[in-house]
Image (cartoon, rainbow, N blue to C red; front, side, top):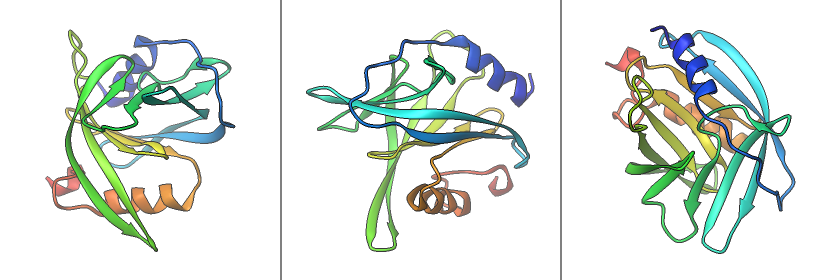
Length: 174
């Protein structure tokens, strides 16, 4: 199965309803790349961040529907040991702190593997306060970048893209 077909299948596998937002939304571009860094598609979505007493929800919405299966992400306010992606528990496998200008930014890496699904395994890169930064497919090595146009998002993605430590393995680093 090609990475484009996998991404398309993943888009169709899940859906959920829009949470009520208590913060203004911001526009995010969701960019899909093949394993050899070819841009295959761009979608636009609104990022809506909502909070409950113990969790923060990041929802990427377009026309009041979720446009990507991983877009409703929930993380505990007091713990980042797991990220819930469309109600699947996604355990943390690593985190790294990077210096971006005057600010330390912690990028957490989670291991997504939906039960009873095939070829959807991915590493999910998440920054609290920013939301989803990127997904990297483990089998097909596709990359999906969540770009809100901010300097933080650009610099964090540049750091991941140039990483050679195994935190964000690119096919050219294998």
